[in-house]
Picture 1 (cartoon, rainbow, N blue to C red):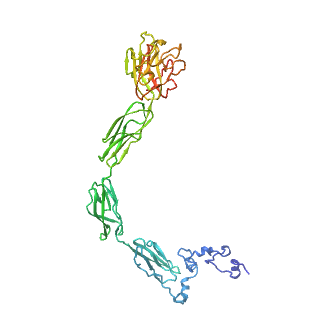
Picture 2 (tube, rainbow, N blue to C red; picture 1 turned 120 degrees about the horizontal axis):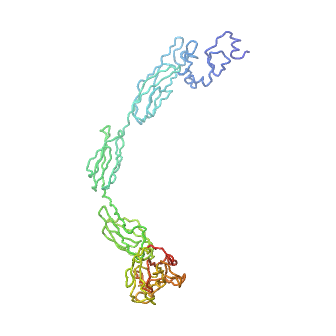
Length: 548
């Protein structure tokens, strides 16, 4: 037995011509040239529907008119179909297949949202017939069944949709027909969906967009009745404006289909305009300033200003912490307040209107300073030999001077001295103050360096008695003096003097009277804290100026 292909042809069919055949899955090298050897998959792709039994050549195949006789490769399916009575066509050598013709020329209209069904019809050709949309599109929601030609579904968009359908028979013959489907709009009844008009507040801007459904989707709006002055309804359905007229206003609003005025609907409303809102008052605390540091005993002026745009201001209250210190009905309040003790204080103001609404200022905090610092120029009274003289080396440019008259040292303070200087200051009762004085002895002489100190509210050294405490600039015998130096009321090297304790809180008086004349003084410090245990400066050649 000969092998397949060329060997068999040479053995059994010498001089034969084998060409323009299709052998799916065959080997090109085993047969003469001029034949087709596609893969099985490629072979099946040359037919209209190989799996469905439609073996007519597809429209895009290169096997059409490729035979040696100019006809398609393969069998002539139209003749095969004509020869078989099972297809219902005439048989015999004279059988004629009628041409494929699409009979459907018009399709019925559809309606948005409604179910649709229509079947395309064709005659002639070789069954079965397959259908497709060759160009254009069907209305959204409708589909074409390729086997039955049925157009079914639910159209979702109104309009006119043109397209071309194509019928193809088993022989590959095609026919086309331009068709269209008109989709009617489904027009629901108009309905205003805004159930109520929002409340308007007098003097405030207002806007509300009305809404409706149905019709062709756009509306023209009208209003019957009287709106308050300042409000209006636009043709696109926006009620807007600003009115000062409080009250209730009955109105009827109509929505009209913008594309068909025969469709409209109306609804009655009651528009409520509420009274204008109350504006809270405003208030500012203009004094004191925040983070201020003030001496204990000083008097501050507390000042606040308030306003109310409604003209309904009722009162202003001033507080120190949570304690009410002053109140007035006017727009401005200003009162004095004394800093009685040391510490931190918070001030605030509150404004209240006739409607009970309030406004608060941010708290203003001040700190206090209990250190008592006096310069020579602060002297309130000078008697006898005491005077204030200019001195560029002194604090504030001035010094208190008891000039050297060569008078002998006074053994004790006098109840009514002939010469003295007095200073006033505020101090707290029961608090321990340490006294420091910066002095300078005339000619740096030990005979010009001391004085007696008396106070108005200290029993043991009260003014008007002979009691006192002594200030001596030289620290101890033979310690020497040199220009300005700081000293307390102690005597001896590194010896601290006794503290001063006042019996009453309030304004105090310090009297300095002569023990030895010739003494200059430029600064007096009574310290309850900072200089309780340490001197503000040096004993000799000092340049320290303590700030007030």
